[in-house]
View 1 (cartoon, rainbow, N blue to C red):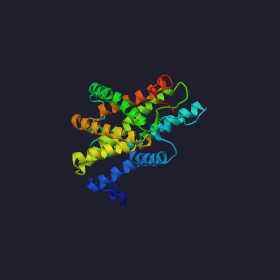
View 2 (view 1 turned 90 degrees about the vertical axis):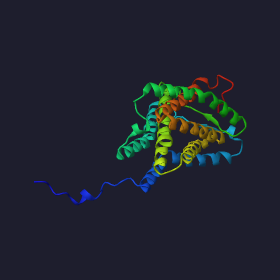
View 3 (view 1 turned 90 degrees about the horizontal axis):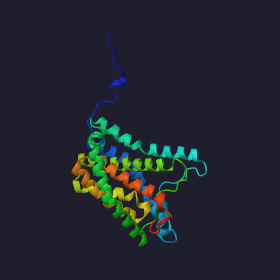
View 4 (view 1 turned 30 degrees about the vertical axis):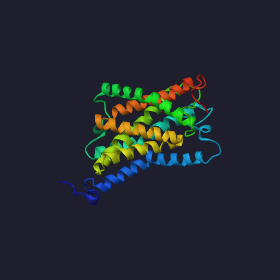
Length: 266
């Protein structure tokens, strides 16, 4: 005998994803990830801009110690921070699977590893040197804080954590602010230009804690990344490019800080 369905069986009927649902979902994903970071960065920038002294005399530290003098506890906090920051990406994957797609539809998979690696490396090489030059110029003009990419203790896990941090940043930003956001805005009927502007301004805004230079530089990078994503239809190469750029910044600073004259330190 077939058991009767309980009253809860029809409590959550399958429904088509409406524009309202997609809009609310997108706002919630941003609210628990980089949208919240944008608000935090704005508050941080206001605090820096209203503090006595110039912006370049202040520092923005990206990877600092979470438990000074306690390396194992520090490592635990570092790994916790990296993994918990990726939860919104898992949430995005869940939402995409719910609609019958998945991260594969964004081009975040292993379908074309060598192509993604080659394209990403080329993009990183093209952006890297110009990005450093732009940062130095903006700091020299007083529009940027001194960015300290890492301030970790000299322990065995320092460089692995910096590499993992770079990977986490790139996956979070490119999957959510580039691929997922553009997909949702397309589904909501936004024009390509409006979607590009929204993604790029959002990317710049959560870098405001670095100053005006950080905002402008990352906004321009956002425009380039949106163009390349539209052209290639894959976010994989942009994740590779962003990872390489951050590894270069984090590890490069760790190796060169205090040893070369052109690299500002706090």
